[in-house]
Image (cartoon, rainbow over the protein chains, first blue to last red):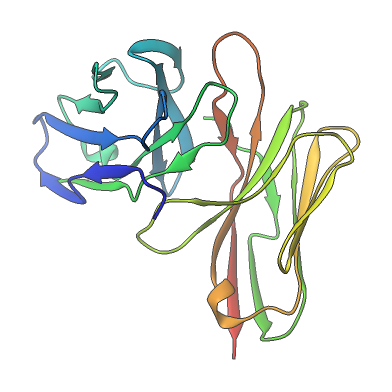
Amino acid sequence: DSGVTQTPKHLITATGQRVTLRCSPRSGDLSVYWYQQSLDQGLQFLIQYYNGEERAKGNILERFSAQQFPDLHSELNLSSLELGDSALYFCASSVGQGDEQFFGPGTRLTVL
Amino acid sequence: GQQLNQSPQSMFIQEGEDVSMNCTSSSIFNTWLWYKQDPGEGPVLLIALYKAGELTSNGRLTAQFGITRKDSFLNISASIPSDVGIYFCAGQRYGGATNKLIFGTGTLLAVQP
């Protein structure tokens, strides 16, 4: 158990819908990262937050957004969902910005 | 998206055999990490390497940070059935305000008892 929690574990929804994925970092970690894992693209970095502020963006679509709240938990919002958005979404956390990242168990999103 | 070249893509071995896998990049990294992912789970950090040439062990696992900073390898000695899973390398650069991980394509390891 990494100490990073993610909910829900599974999510099934339809095209065009909007969903929110939630992540709680390890106690004491200030950085949260979101990654997407799909069969064709592998594990890809989406976005990073540090202490409530966005710090870096990767291959994140404009339909996706995220935020980190004062209690340091983070949410990833996915809207206007398409079939190709079906993937595993992982959250990771680290103490600072150059430290080892610990991954949560992931949310499996299926878009039908 | 960017992925690092990782080989082999898969390995099917007998229990007790040694395993070696490697990862290469066209650009340098400040840190190399190795993760293992079990089905339905998130990646779990196995070994972190911070210095070119560094050789680090964690039990039966040994990893090295290449001198050129563009490659890394992972060895597993005397494999056991619970070593089954997908192994990923990841490179990390420091610069600006990000330390995102760039992952390799993964090596699927199957161990036959």
